[in-house]
Length: 387
Image (cartoon, rainbow, N blue to C red):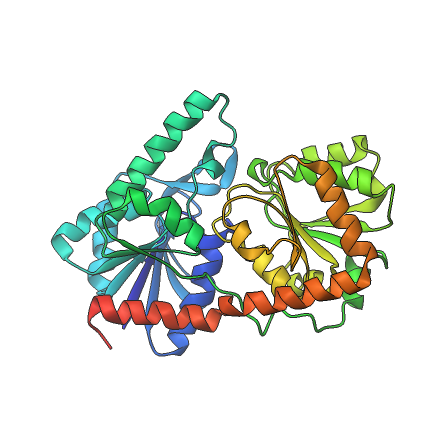
């Protein structure tokens, strides 16, 4: 079967869409399917590259203000370029990863081409409107964004999203069926087993309990809230806060760390290569996430698979991943004392830590990427009519 993935965000922006396609795509190829990907290029020209062993077609694009790794496809000749690729590749099914310009153009072209299309929603408008001042304007922009979502995704056969929380959010906005399918986690790669000594030495991580965050350092991630909690908790117990990732708030967060007087207890690693990433989870004691706009959180799944208890804000799909008091703690947004208490409990209570660690491993099993692969393969067969 020939499967075409389409998205308006992709590498070098490291996000849920990229991780989904770069993991599931090669697995599908290994099962005999042919895969191609259409995304914005990294410059103002049309490109073709091999990335993660996938054929990736880039549409000419420009950078988005404030987020230079996000590219905005140039409208001129977009449809003609897309038509040429689609007619040459001849996909049996098209799988949209968002509803923005490239996906919208593909849907419009498909009124003539008549190729089965399904879509996956990784989108929450809060990730875009976080910098908007004023609730009135924020709501107007979110309504506009959801309108665009509905217009595109109401023209596909089926829409998936990674969690039941995501289904609940989009169901009322769509006329087509929606279903929850996890983006999946590679349980052979992310697990508690492994020697972390070289990673500790490479990144100068001290031999003490590690509170871990992995992800973008952007406004919607609310890392300031975590740092403020660390500043209080560090006075009560000894631990290290390791922040893995990069983003537009990195310099500001480093300055806040200095202002709080906790620089010696906080390590900013910046971007880390894929081969190093699993070992950060293996050396962690706790994973923490404060983002209020998560449809899944791949990082939280990776942490759970590695046996980490999770401290998470009580918002969006994080409530599906964390069973409060079982594999971690949920806290209300802004409740810094609750974060401090959660850190203290897990660091100081060994039996509690071990119980929560085991529960995380148990709960993450349903997110095994092999299940995800099977689910999407079944959808492709069902909607394309191809074996």
